Amino acid sequence: MRIVLLFGLLSIALAGCQEPTSDAVAEPDGAQLYAQHCAACHGDNGAGGVGVPLNLAAFQYGVSDEFLKLTIQHGRPGRVMPAFSELGEAEVDALVEHLRSWAPGKPVIPANGHIDGNPQRGKALYAQHCASCHGSQGEGGEGTGVTFSRPRDLPIIAPALNNDGFLAAATDQLIKAAVVNGREGTPMTSFREQGLSDTQINDIVSYVRSFENQPDPNPVGNPDDEPLTIAYDSPYSVEETVKALERAAVGRNFRIIRTQTLEDGLFPEPEQNPNQVIVYFCNFDLVNRALAIDPRVGLFLPCRVTVVEQEDGVKVMSINPKRLAYLFNNAELNRLCDEMVKTYSNIIEEATF
Ligand code: HEC
Ligand code: HEC
Image (cartoon, rainbow, N blue to C red; front, side, top):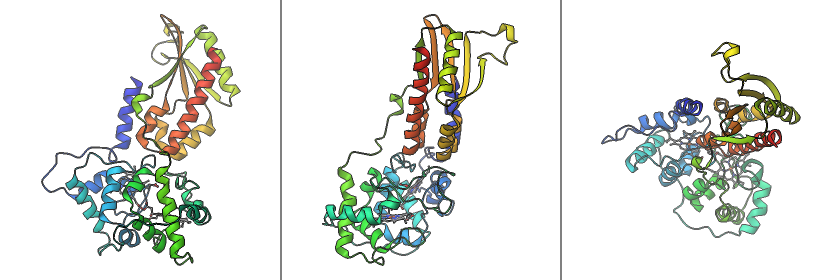
C-alpha cells in the first residue's frame, strides 16, 4: 500500500519529465513539447537549471541538428537527462526546431570525419586540462542534483564525456569544435586560445572517443530487478528483535527517533497489536547527502524498519530506496542508495543474527 502511494507521489513529482505526450497531432508543436518535457530542467527559455543551458549561441553554433536529435532520443544514462524514446521522429524534429529558434543562424561544425589523434598523448593532456571539470574518467562534474549539491558559483555543470548517450550523439568533429571554440558564456573555454595546438587537440579528441571502449559507467539498471523491500527473518520475538535493532542502529551512528506500533494513532493503546512495530531511525549524514543530490528522495528514504510477527515467524522489513532511485536517472543517487541499502542490511543482519 505504502509503496503504491509513494509511486503515486513520485509520478506527480516527476510529471513533466516523464509523461508521454498526448495523442500525436498532425503538426507537433515544438514549443509545447518543450514546455511539457524539457522546461522543468532546462528553463522556460532554455537558460538552464538542473540541465545545462540550451539557448546560448556558442552552444547552438557548435552542435548539429543530428546531435540534438540523438541527445533527446538517447538521453544521458545516469546523468539525469532522460531518454525520450517515446517521442516520434516528427516530435523530436519539432523540438529541435524550437531549440533553434533561440539562436538563429547556421551551426558551424565541420563535416563529419574521423579524427585520427593519439589517445595515449591525449590522456596526459586530458588529465592536465580537462579532468578538473569533467572528472578523471570523463564522468562529469559532481552535483547532478536539483539544487543544493552544485556549488552556487558553478551554475553550469560539466557534462559527462564518458557517457554512452553523449558518445552516441557527438561526432569527433563536434567534440573538437567544443574544445577549439569553447562555449562562450559557460566555464568551458577555448583551448585554442589557451594555446593548445591542433595536434594536441586531436589527441584529446581521440582520447575522449576511447571512453567508448570502456565498460559503461552507468549501466541502465532494471528497477524490476530490485526488490521493493529488504526483508529478513528474525529468530527472536518482536520485542527482542526491536531491542536488537535499536542497539545495532545506534552502534552505526543512527539516531533512534521513535518506536511505535503499526496501529499507533488508529486504535487506543491497549487495542494495538504489539507484534507489529515500526522503529524510526535516521543517520542524518546519509539523509542530508541524499537530499543534497535530489530533495525529492525525501519521499522514499527508508528511515524506518518494520518488525512484524507472521505465521511463519518474525520478519524485519525496510523499503528498498534503490528501486525508486532508478526513476531519477542519477548515478550519484544510485551510488548513495546502494550505500544506504548496505548499511540498513548490516543493521538488520546484526539484529537478526
Ligand atoms: C572549467 C571547467 C572546464 C574545463 C577545464 C573543461 N571543460 Fe569542457 N565543459 C565545461 C562545461 C561547464 C561544459 C558545458 C558547456 C555548455 O553548457 O554548453 C563543457 C562542455 C564540454 C563539451 C561539450 C559536451 C556536451 O555535452 O555538449 C566537451 C566535448 C568538452 N567540454 C570537452 C572538454 C575537454 C576535452 C576539455 C579539456 C581540453 C574541457 N572540456 C575542459 C567545463 C569545462
Ligand atoms: C530531469 C531533468 C532533464 C530533463 C527533463 C531534460 N533534460 Fe536535457 N539535460 C539535463 C542534464 C542534467 C543535462 C547534462 C548532462 C550531464 O551533465 O552530463 C542535459 C543535457 C541536455 C543536452 C546536451 C547539452 C550539451 O551541452 O550537450 C541537450 C541537447 C538536452 N539536454 C536537451 C533536452 C531536451 C530537448 C529535453 C526535453 C525533450 C530535455 N533535455 C529534458 C537534464 C534534463
